[in-house]
Length: 114
Image: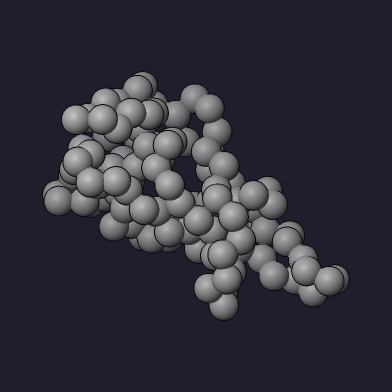
């Protein structure tokens, strides 16, 4: 059973270094909304803005986020919705894993799926 809080356009997400995660594509064109905000899915593209990560004094900012939803969750147009518990990783522009994003508490009401 999957459980967690539904991520929506009003959820605050950041990279592990404080950069802001934003949808680069329009969140789920299905028109599904939660708390008045569009509900993104794993099919949406997310970018990172303002990451200040450095390695040895050289900038290596997070650039994108890739979500890895489990099977059996809630779908919108065939794509899994994102929960605050959905595994994900932030990547640099060179596709180097940088760590998991931080999803702020207070995402939409809890959702459960079997």
